[in-house]
Amino acid sequence: MGDLILLVIIGTSIWVFFDAKSIGVKKGQIAGFANMGPVGWMFGCLLLWIIGFPLYVAKRGEFKRINKTWPNSVKQSSMTMPNNIRQSSMTDIEQLEKLASLKERGLITEEEYNAKKKNLLGI
Image 1 (cartoon, helix red, strand yellow):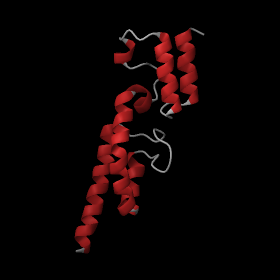
Image 2 (cartoon, helix red, strand yellow; image 1 turned 30 degrees about the horizontal axis):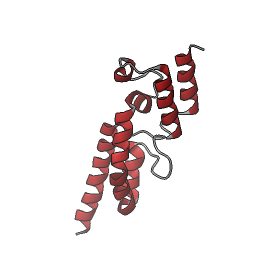
Image 3 (cartoon, rainbow, N blue to C red; image 1 turned 60 degrees about the vertical axis):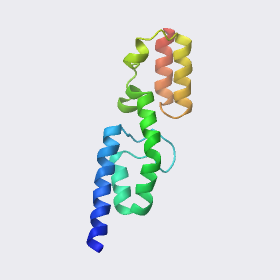
């Protein structure tokens, strides 16, 4: 029985690692205790499975939403706008509002926000 429990813990922890990696989870995307990358989630599940695994499952949707909303900024910390936004007819004001929203939600840093703002304003 103990071997089965250990196998479940190891198996789900490995699944968490690969799932987090495929979603694009990175440290710094969300605030609080769940602010971990794929390796952190895996070890969190291995060491304290009863809390780590349900917490990951609960936060998984948030990570998916974050990485779908702003893929280049979150996944690569890139200062370029995603192609779908760059090719749209979004005005500079709309882009600044979007950047401000991302900064307020903690998805981009103050430095990323200021650099992109200067770029948009031509400063």
